Image 1 (cartoon, one colour):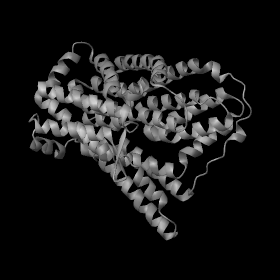
Image 2 (tube, helix red, strand yellow):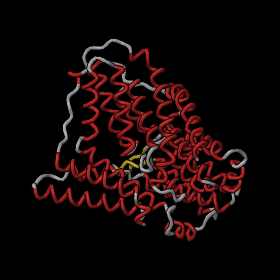
Image 3 (cartoon, rainbow, N blue to C red):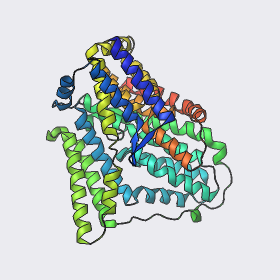
Image 4 (cartoon, rainbow, N blue to C red):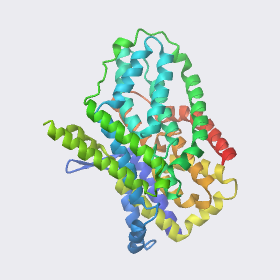
Length: 431
């Protein structure tokens, strides 16, 4: 048990250190995420010290249950691929430009419109995709219009990581925790709708108050500052919308059809790529849209999640997880699991936290939903809280926008603490 605890602590410390000091390493011109390397080392040490045997790992990786991490990874990567495909066609850029043009001379109108659009798009796609797409657009636009980008960057980031709670596909942590607990798509939505709505309203009000003075500043017309993104291929755009929409609908009724969710997502992703490829070949056009979408899928999550699964498996087999569960069960599980998952996300990042809590939160469904809330809102507290936060901060450095760790945490504390408390309180009353 002591060995498992030490190895878990060293792995977590290594992940946080990698995030801060060396996010990636280059080997033979290939960029490797150091977080994944640390996780792989942690998993190997768990097996090397006999905490968990390779045979046990293999059995758990191939077991035919909903908690199988391979199935969960297939589901998430497939859903991401459907979203990335639309992004390659300028779908998200088109929407971003649409709201920027209609703001005209009002920064407040721009702020509100941005929050609404990002929230809606996040619900049906993924918070990571939205952050990756909207951040550079906001930076470029703000520079051209000579306005402070920070209110709009925080607006985008908070909206993306708040409304990602609404559907099971909004965040990989949702998928891992909910699927591991056997929670269906529609069952998840029924429970999480009100906590997400309450959190969205509270986070927006706080955001608005924090940046109100800056949003009241006079500004020239914004309409002519936007270049205007266009959908690059309308037939493929229609195809992408149909496939994404159909996939979400089938996920919602998958429990009634008795079809595993990962198979639905995988089928739609593969079929979309095949149909798009045939379409491009018939038109004798290059396959850049298709190949770029395939390349942008988050494959780096595969070694990271699988390795953290092995680390957590070692914690389970050692009996350490039982002690943690016993500690968290001393109070109301919604608040103990919700707050602890929120804090743990900011110590080790929300993905390894979710892998760990998927084994801890089996006490009841309230603990699972609370852990999901903590994994999403935890992203708002510090940049370590989620991969979206790490990517966001790295992009801001590229575009010369200064947001220090302390600045992020000051604003994050104002927004995240009330948001997590109101979300857990609503969950407490409805579950």
